Length: 160
Image (tube, rainbow, N blue to C red):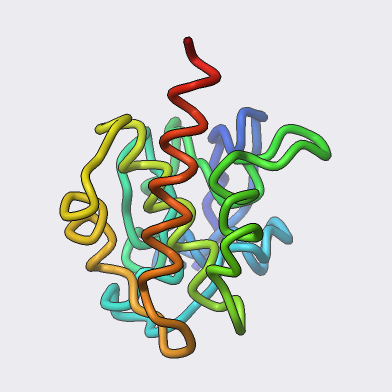
């Protein structure tokens, strides 16, 4: 079976890659394009470690076939920072020590980005509900929620 040629936009840049028809976006990102920030946790869409934004919508990259990326826009954890400047969510995760082993961290940050895009001033309850699809085995979720709420507050202040 021949490989498919996919043209897409990844992290604000035009991108092209070859993939098998059955290959996942997660595999194409990590193995084909070298974007290893997106992690594989469960490969069943249950843990959130591989969360990406596909046309602005939060999806598990392990469940999306790479050919579905044709003509679409993908944002990964690598696409949140601007050069050396971390996204406020990334900075707040560091400041709040909202990470340990790091497997789940990119997925949490991308999911939080989707939350703040949809709801710039979420309540704690909304934040916990939104992030419920992301699992962490190392930390308590409290630091993660605090980091997201602090980032939301900072982002609101910088938008004013």
